[in-house]
Length: 146
Image 1 (cartoon, rainbow, N blue to C red):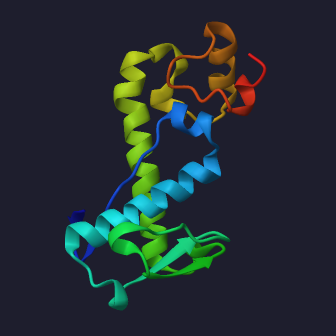
Image 2: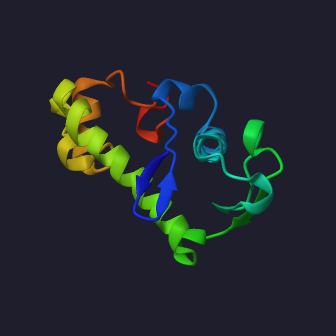
């Protein structure tokens, strides 16, 4: 985990291929579990004294060092629990920086420096003009049936 003032976090990621091979929800749950497990392991947190809040309707299945950790799903948790909101911000900023930086440098024709991979009109037009690039999720609505 990284230290961020009083708070620690552990970041987990999945590639576009991994997401396409399963689905966004499953990849999200795997990342959530990996993040909690990584934080418990790296900080040697006592599971019986720790607690996790999941933004959404379902908990991730925790294993390894985090097995047995108390966890609660909370719909719109990021609107009610500031540490959940912080986790959402860390995930979004990390992804946006990656898209605006390395990914844009590799594939500038898609305008990732501006759209960050989101389905803007310009991004959809670039996909239609150039076809998908290796970082596009083929399960992305604009790319289905291509």
